[in-house]
Length: 428
Image (cartoon, rainbow, N blue to C red; front, side):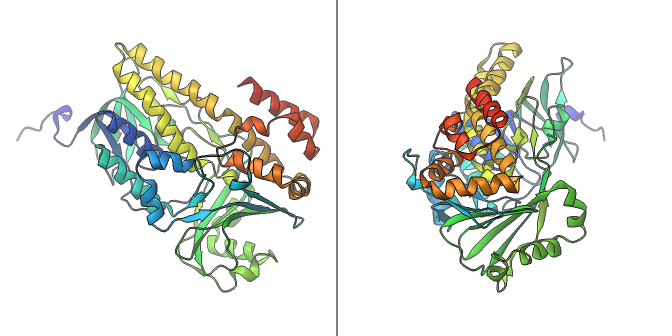
């Protein structure tokens, strides 16, 4: 029997747009495109529902995108916890309390959400399906395919299939295959951190705010995710990765047990999910597009999990990219299509650059016990300033409200640091 040529194998697929990755970025993009009548295919190596190491926090403004996708009510009905704000504890024991509703700026709502990724991602993927997107689960994309001009024309899977597409989007996360194959991935030198993520039931005194406990040797985020379960994400410097790999559970439990404010709260708690490692963080693509392709979500950039930017940036990035992918599909020439993808990258940088600067400043403060203690003293005494900063990290206050010398010099930050980052924000 004569075998059909590879290009004609029935197992091969085609679509106008191939989205690699079915998480929040991929689902948001696919939903918007499918609603506009675009033939879009999502391919993910996992089968849903699937766990995902994540702080599992959605900012107040993330609810706007969920509502646009018709997913907000589903997420809330799933038992997602409502978060009123954030409590940050410095190494000195001083506390910062910032509330979303306390800010003069008003967002889509005055509460954040916290929900397990198994639940959230399944809901979002189902919304993309309902809009008309096709979904293939359990299939690993390992490379892109290119024309003689080097323009991306599709992708190849680990089972030998080829998927043809006019535009390929890498929405495949922190270790994006698409970003690597397009030679766009870049790992930053600082801050180099890794994380352990798990869930406990029965943690004491979990309130309506998310918590960040900053210590000399790392920080841990704690938040209710509904149904009596608490997400716990420990982030430590990269230099401790080898020690961590010798025993994740023991490392996490030992770290928690050595913190006097946390040990009693976890004494009677039961761990209900595996301890999963993720990182290193601080990666940002050189640019978020190539000829015939684009990156979105963590595949494009992920700096540090302290501010919880990941899910909102993914949802908003997918929503934003949809318009430019549609323009690329309508373009009369390949050059016109690439111009549309390049325009996406420019708009994306303008929208997120201020937040990137805020993230950098916060990372510098969190990485220095002296600066963290100073910031806690200032913000602990000025709740209006704390509410404003939490509003920025909640995505409904413009970053410029805290990226000015009047705000920054209240912390007595080094003049060079404050001036440099304010200039960066103003420039963009």
